[in-house]
Image 1: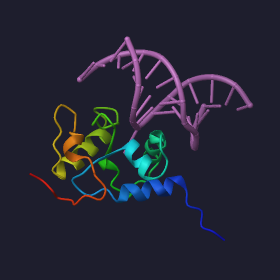
Image 2 (image 1 turned 45 degrees about the horizontal axis):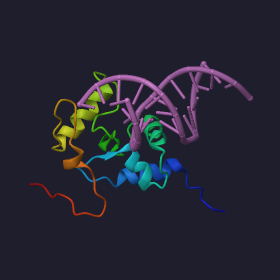
Image 3 (image 1 turned 45 degrees about the vertical axis):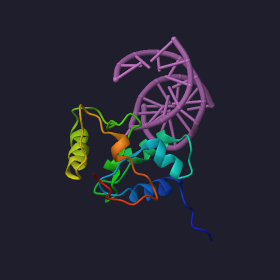
Length: 112
DNA sequence: TCCTTGACGGAGA
DNA sequence: ATCTCCGCCAAGG
């Protein structure tokens, strides 16, 4: 019997690899999980995470460098604070992907 | 079964 | 930088 590896599990796995202090986009996670073009699936998967998960879901933001949760909602604030706690700066609701986007394979903690 | 709704993203205007 | 449009497709009505 083969263990069935679901799309959801691959998505969880990739997200678990995002280093602290970095962020990744939904589309990026989809690609790394070998699900190109399926950014929405990543978003839906995150919306269904079990409460209390240890997955660093908050490191996933959209391609515009913004948090994809209703502004003002408690979940939005929660994600924002978790990112700030890791030293990520947010200017006018935007995070510089140029500066913080995860580059798999490159050494971490490379900060100016 | 059909229709709508998204934690999305890229291309154009 | 902002705003449509459109492709994507699982889940819920």
